[in-house]
Image (cartoon, rainbow, N blue to C red; front, side, top):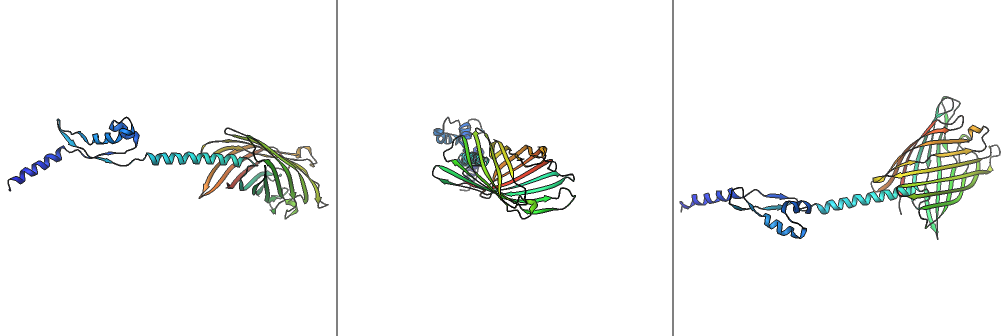
Length: 331
């Protein structure tokens, strides 16, 4: 019996000598079809079985070569790709809605405008606009309400220091727009300016109203349009100057991938009551970049723009920086 033991041990060593180490396969169909010689996924099972008997390193010998399947990661990769593509499409669609001032989208923009170089002492003005937008539907029409509540720091432009801070005049607009609008979208409605300023230097002390309108075109990557209004004072403090002022905001947006976009949305104003002709117009020129992203589950639009003042009143700014964070609430 003892004489048989060395023989058994010799056979075990021989078996080990012809067994190759396991071959690891990532069973994504592209990799498996290449490595195992299968021409279609239908031949995959047969190819794996054939691969389990491969020529051993020793000439003329065949050995069992165990194939260890790691599991396909193609489904996971496809799911990730589809999820990424869907997110990109959602972000692009949301960006187009954001760039449309009369879209059916609830939002809360907080916009900070910093104006540099006011007066002979190059003072800095800061205006933070809180601008809730709430649309609703009435039959075949969308009604888009936009309220602007400005928090203003107004420096004393004739001095090197000092200024007033508080709430300015609140502005309210209601646009009536067709619910079934196509590439060309338009809206018309009233605009009302209310004398809510907490200090005389921060507002007009007048009730003012007038018409407002917007028209835009969305084609391909572009969203292009213009918003305009003009208000006239009709009531308020008798000691305050009357108001006749126009606002024009053109907007040009080009949408990129992953929610990024290029933008130019300057606000031009004309004070028809200005005593000097050169003080009538404020004309900024410039633009910037924006991005749609999420904070947790909350969609957000962030953008930064810079504008050079091609024309401004004698005590007006030289240039302006605009920062905006807009919270979005898609329906």
